[in-house]
Amino acid sequence: MPVIPSSSSGHEAATTPLRRSSLRVVAIGGGTGLSTLLRGLRRYAPSPQPSEADTVAVPSLISDLAAVVTVTDDGGSSGRLRRHFNMLPPGDLRNCMVALADDEALLSKLFRHRFSSSTAGTANGNGENTGSLEGHSFGNLFVAALAEITGDFAQAIKLSSQVLATRGHIYPATTTNVTLSARMDDGSIVEGETNITASKHRICELTLEPAGAEPLPETLESIARADLITLGPGSLYTSLITNLLVKGIPEALTETRGLRVFICNLMTQSNESLGLTASQHIEKIYEHMGQAIFDYALVNTAPVSETLLRNYALEGATPILPDIERIEALGVRVVPGDFAAEGDTLRHNADRVAETLLDLGLESGDADLDAVRLH
Image (cartoon, rainbow, N blue to C red; front, side, top):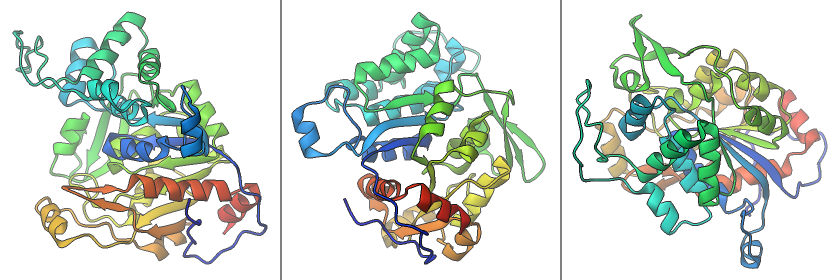
């Protein structure tokens, strides 16, 4: 494990707490960002089927790992299942299950498998072939089958996780069938996640319908007991803020004694965050919560290659400006660093982010946390 990164603020804890031996971790988010983070954390979480080789190779620095996942997707395979079976969208939850799967070979490959050939079916009012498997992932269909058998979506996720032997718990942010609603900068109201992300207008305010959607009791309990809680990376509104609109979650994040860390995205995103700096991402989250919550922010300060910059520029996207002084003016300590991994697209380096998060959590005892929140 690397040495804990220094905060650029220069503030020191009043006392030096003993280093923890393990952490209870909660990761909140959705989309590719959350599943990427979970892949990094997975290797430090205990296996449900441990072997001697596991404990020798990588110590279990995480004693308990929970993912809280947004459930507002209404597009693609998840959207079709949602409309056809009146169920919650399984896609983001499935991706998190695969990311935490102890077996990354056949079973996880099976859950990721997406059918490419169509079978005979009947088109519905949306022009969708409701009898077709084309475009569906096997994992989504597996969760849908379990949800129909048990009559309980949360139980279907739990059973699916057991089949994959996941190294952690996965909780939908709510089991209420919620819909996203957004007030745009032209005053219009747009309903549904797909329509919101397709809009050419900027999101001003996001709400959930119904507004009183509640989380699972296990989610609130996990946040209350956590030593480390993360939000991000992920689409600012449709993967992150959506979770914070669920009744009880903002209060739980305010009251917890766990270290709360924001993981900033690497690039701005069309219809979500074009033109926003790192500090403005935090401010948008605070506006929707009505209160400040973060103790630390992980912010990428490494340059992006010219090739990727040109590719992203076609969508109007640019690297998020790491305005460190403005972040720290919000009372949030910054952990700057190279957290990016380049390929066809730009993603967070899951291992590097996980190591940095664990160092923060393991070094931060109660005395240090008090100092952080008072700085």
